[in-house]
Image 1 (cartoon, rainbow, N blue to C red):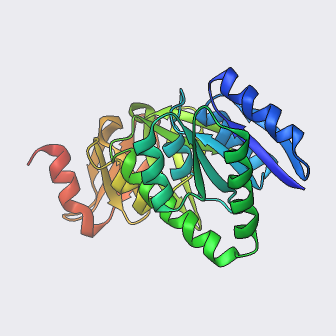
Image 2 (cartoon, one colour; image 1 turned 180 degrees about the horizontal axis):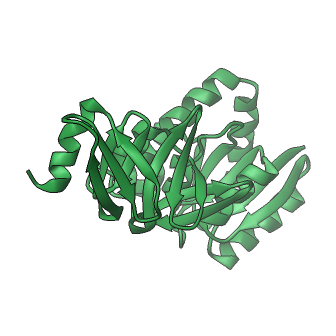
Image 3 (cartoon, one colour; image 1 turned 180 degrees about the vertical axis):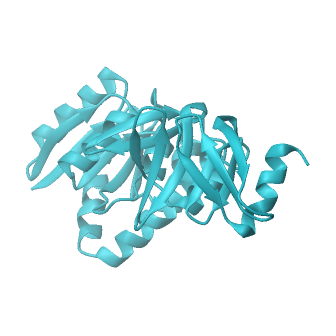
Length: 251
C-alpha cells in the first residue's frame, strides 16, 4: 500500500483528490492538511510515502514546507497548483510530478505510476529531493517572515523578532525565545544565511544572536566580550567575532 497525504487549503480540491485516491487500489489516504504548518507536522508524524502538495497555502506555503523537509525519511512530492509557472519550476528542480487544478483522474493515475517507479530507485529519489529543497529555499527568498521551530512532533511558526538566538549544541540547533527553546529545522549556517537581512549576528561558531535582544555587553579582555540577552542568557563572543561587538556598538 502507498500511504498518501493531501496538503491543500481548498476543501473542494482536497475532496476531489480524496475521492479519486480512495477509489484506486493499492492506495491509503492517511491524512489531510489545510495549511503548510499542519502538513509539515503530519509528514513527520505519519511518514507518508507520497504527498500531494499545494504551493499556495496559508500560514506556510508549499515551497516553505519543502524547504523544511530536512529530517528523513522524506516522502515523494507531487505538486498540485493552479499556477503553471510555479509547478514547472518545482518539477524541473526535483518534484516527481505536478498536477494542475482541477486534477483529472487520468492525470492522477499517471502521476502515481511515476511515483511507484521512483520508489524502486532510492538514490535517484534522494537526489531529486535535494534539488527540490534547494529550489524551494530560493523561491521563498532569504528574508523569512517566520522561523520554524519543532517540539516533538509539533511545528511552530515563530516571528523572527521573538527569536533571541540560535544555538548549536552537538548535532542540534536550537531556536531560543524568551519562554522556551525549539529544535531548528536547518543547520546554523543555513539559519545565518536565511536571517542575513535581519538584525542577527554570529558571535561564536555555535551562536547567532538577535542584536535587538542584547541587553548588556561586558568586556572580559581587549578581545573578549560577554553578551547578556533579554532573557538573562550569557554568551561569550569569540575572538574572531570581536568586530560583531563593534558593529552592535556602532564603532
